[in-house]
Image (cartoon, rainbow, N blue to C red):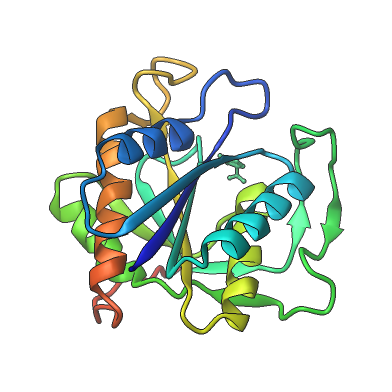
Length: 213
Ligand code: PCA
């Protein structure tokens, strides 16, 4: 049976909510696919998140891993194309750790590309009326670390594909009325589409998703 691991994150940086975790819970609650959907809410801590991810992958041997996190400065659902081997934390993680200019994994490649069909996912989310794009940077905090770690694990597990989706604030929990946000239901729907498209599509679509700067 096909197994999907879908993760979100707990709140961080003093916020009281994280729409990625809230959306993952919604997707799990209504999943009716034939595939096994495993979900988890990861701690926003470099060491804790990587340990939890490694445990989940070892326990469930997923075919597809989709991690999701909040990018509070973005207005659209961002399907990440690349994870870099770099931690440069602007704020401490939830365990008080703030590494600066350290590799995610010593001696590993500088970067890995996501192995999910990122163009097809962004296209399918947008086709459902939810703004979405391919992104070329997942930042240098815990989200990028989890993406890089997942792709490093995937490099040794040929049956496993992995990627990351950054979501905006949910309208329900945005920190200010003018913060860019989407309804939580749309964020959950976007993650569900990402899961279904990843299962269905092994060859990505050849559509432009690049940037000039
Ligand atoms: N967003 C942070 C970490 C957890 C989350 O939801 C990030 O983008 O790195």
